Structure formats: C-alpha cells, structure tokens
Length: 379
Image (tube, rainbow, N blue to C red):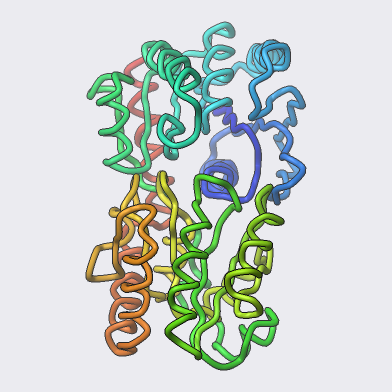
C-alpha cells in the first residue's frame, strides 16, 4: 500500500513526533511511505526531517495566507498525481484542510485525517472559529475516516457537527518510550547535566511556550508554593514565541528559583531531574509530556482538559484540576511533595498505565488495521 502523509510542520510536539514515527515504522512493515510537511516557524524547535521519501512544501504554513494556501494545494495536488498514493493521511489543521482538498482533486482513493486535539476552543477569535468549524464540517463529508487521539476530543468534535459517529475512530497516541520505561537517569546526574539545583524539590512544566499552554498559571502556582516553602524550585522546559515575556514575569515573581532550559534533547535527564510534572494547558489533545512523565514514573498535576484524563488517572497516577486554577494546582503539587511514598506509588501507577496504553507498536497496529479496513471497503 502506498501512503502519503501530510503534516503542517515538524515542530517539536506530539503530532510531528507521531508522524515521523509512523513514516519510519510503516516503511519497516512494507508500506510505501512518503511524508510531506511545511517549514517550521523560526521561533520554535523542530525535529530533523527524514533523509528519504520526504518533501518540503514551502507554501504549506500554519498562518492564514490565501495565496500561499492556493500554492500549497497546487503543489500537493501535483505530488499526489505524480506519486499516486492509495491513501492520504493528514495531521493538524492546515495540512488537514489543504491536504484533503488536494487529495480530492488528485482523486486519491482513501483519505484519513487525525485530530491531535482541535483549535475550535481557546485558540481563535469568534469569527475565525465559525469559519474553521464550517470548513471542518465540509471536509469531514469528504473524508473516509476521522481519527481522534482521545474519546473526549472525538465527543467534542461530534457535538460540533463534525463528521458522523460511523466515521470516527479513537486511536490513542503511541510513542517509543523504551528508555523512559526502563527508568530515567539518577536525580543527581540529571540535575548536574542540566545545570539545575542539586538539592531540594523540583517542579517542572514541559512544552511549547504558547498562549494555549497557559504558563502564566504555572508561574502563579509556583509563586504560591515558593512563598510557603524554602526548599522548592521550578523549571520550564521548552521554547516558543512567549519565552522572553515569560522569563520577565518569572524573574519578578520567583527570582532565581526558576530556570528556563529550552528544549531538552535527553528526556531521561529531564524527567530524572523532576519530582513533579505539571501541565496547565487550556486545551489539549493527548499531551506527550504527560505520557513521557508517566513512562518515567513521575507523578503529575494537570488541568482537566481535552484528552488529559485519558493519560492521568485522577488520584491514582496524579491529580486533575480545573484550568486556570493556580491555587488548586499549588495545593495538589504540595500534597505530592509532602508524601514521598504516595508520590512514588503514583509514579509507578502512571508507568504501568502508559506502558499498557501508549506504546508505538499498538499505534502502528491500530492504523494498519484501519488502513486495511478502508482499502477493503473501497474495492
């Protein structure tokens, strides 16, 4: 089977990580795979592009630009007509829209789109949201299968009139987690390598420095904990357009008790350094950082949005709190730090859950079964 996969950009994050893994893993299973993406944004980190069967489309961009979008559709249509894929699988909003239009123009037999979350809440203005919602409803009518990484995201999109129940498949995220499942690096080694305080408790947040991640609430939580505890410090791992403004806020609130370390290339060191992992997002699909934290055996406190509850089992592997509630975050993080044995049990429960549910082999098995089902139905 010939599969062409389209994603808007290969920025560091869950969608690109999954697309790259699938590109490689499906080829190893005998699929004829091609990956297409646009360029990364200048302020964000990006994964290296594959050395083989990869095409960069410069006009495929996240920002709304009607001329660039038209060029991207033309380029994608030409690529699809030349490579004649049996199936096109798109990921993320822009690639999902332009890629599915191109697939229809190129008469590709089967199209699949994965929602790794959605931008219909918390991202755009009201008029932009209404336009995008109408577009997603129209595109869904011309898509053979719609994939969601969580039940909650699927239910939200169905409630918005996007697709029909029969079109939807819930396929949880799957990652290559071997190193983390074997256990992260030792705490002292990790902190020394990352330039973090060797003593005391360390609470961290991992992800893009973007508005939807709501790092402001993380800083407010950190300020509450720092005011009550002398042995705690904080780390922000990740990068993005908001880094400078967040660093300014952090300095005024926390002084030298918080570090911004950019993207960590060695996840074993990153999670080995942390005692608790926090997520403050206002909207999520399935957050990769929480899967990584679970694999590393670290307890989590996270906002109860999107598919978070399918990664973190409230009271078992961590705690869930309402979005924007710094006081609730601080209380839950404090309770974990005060009870090391309970924290260790939460970490072990998280590792067992992640090992069973979020492995890469399971994801590849799920998608190959879906592809086969769709191709059989098309015959």
